[in-house]
Length: 225
Image (cartoon, rainbow, N blue to C red; front, side):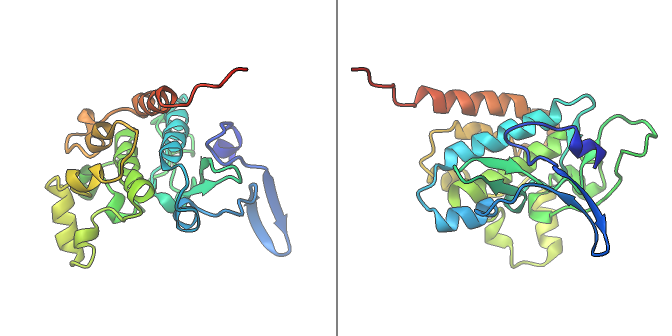
């Protein structure tokens, strides 16, 4: 709660307060009637998916740019809420990790993760990092741009098969399928998010700048009378 209350960014769900009464305890945030991005895309198939991807990259850059950095730890479509004007906000900081390596009580050692969004190194009990967030972000772009789950071709296989595929560097979707989304975004950067070596993945700052620049370069110029 303390970490979340200090955050302020248009693409991060804000914390409004805390409730503690006879009905229980809870954190209070704005209500997003459009729901998460998965629900939103299903009900608004013509939504600007490129903008949503760019919004999420911007929010992730903000989290990673904090001092110390904040690792979300469970990036996926279910944890991205949509505003009434169609913009994306990152939510659910239950698995967030503060990368300060100090015994302050704010660093989480929670292992929880969603397998099909997990970077290969996490399968060997490595600590979640900004690089593993970027890997999950790349997987989330599949959900947004193509309305598909990462590793959809093997999702019915035993867990051990999926784990080995991810550990061996199998991309969550084939490059050919990714190209089918007809996006204006530099798709090679999304592919780079799935690099087996964490240091080869782009930083969230690079993604946010590249995606924002791509959208700006294709924006229609305002007409003047």
